[in-house]
Length: 294
Image (cartoon, rainbow, N blue to C red):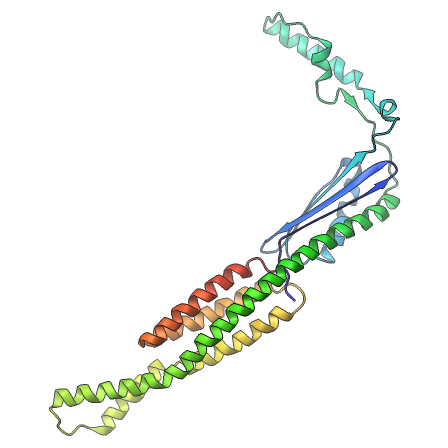
């Protein structure tokens, strides 16, 4: 069954005193795009992360945000360091600014302690192979959660598509039943008009038949209806298929729109025109929904 391209997933776990948090979200996109945000110590794993996502998701803009949070334990103070070389540089530069601008304000400890990276936690070396084994598991959980949401939204889209396809099928049935009557009514109007203009004189029946045949050929919508019905069957099959079918659905809906446009231009019948308008309205809504199908 079809999936939506919109979803969110989250998972977390602890490794070596660090909380690994993985968040995934996806939105609709014409192609497949993956954005990965990682802490610097995990940059080497970006390719593996993208590969993992590509195995499961086939279309949409997917954002993956992975962060680590140090476990706040009694060892926290021992792990915190003062970045003295950086503070000395800051202090020197601040003095230059003060002297240059002839400022009176003193450079205080409070001011220095608020500077970026004045204190830091030294990055620990990670065993990337072991870290990836651990991270792959929670990444998988986050992706599963994301896919589950995409599937749930896909079910809602599926029901909406089925409902609209049934509505279109009913309108199409009306077109099929109405089409033969259009020719008969045209023939009757033509005969009445000719009789009125010729004052009941004899008319050339062969010429009349020829005129009706020309009109029949110009206004015959049988081929368009048959093609439209075929497209509708294919569309229903796509709704049941697995994988990325969103672009195919959009293309098929364009073809249906083209057929119904032709039907509308061929027929001058008021009732057919009303049904054409209703079908166009349903197709427009379906095309809008199809933009969010994987």
